[in-house]
Image (cartoon, rainbow, N blue to C red; front, side, top):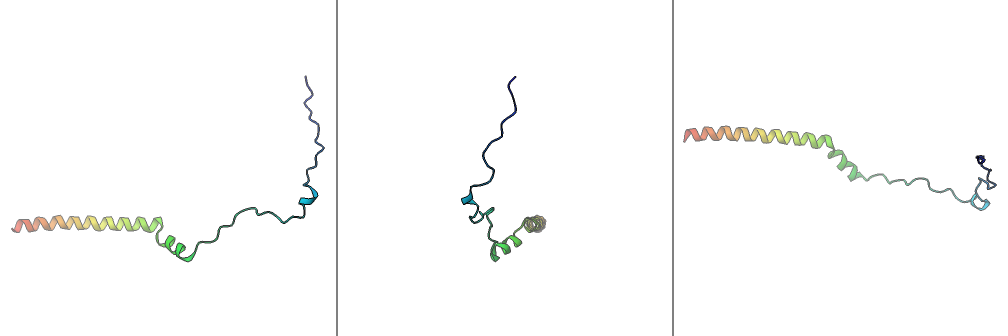
Length: 79
């Protein structure tokens, strides 16, 4: 059976001396904050306001069609 103990590496874990004095690297990209108009647009047009306005529009359309057919039948009975 072969020996499974691995020999330790003689290579150092430290970086070379020339690398130690360099400026630190950027670790993450920082995104600029959104401008005023984009924040205002996202405040107005978010899923809650869109859903509310669509439900309100649906209610108005259904009410309009109900009265349209109701009064068109009444007008047809008079003629």
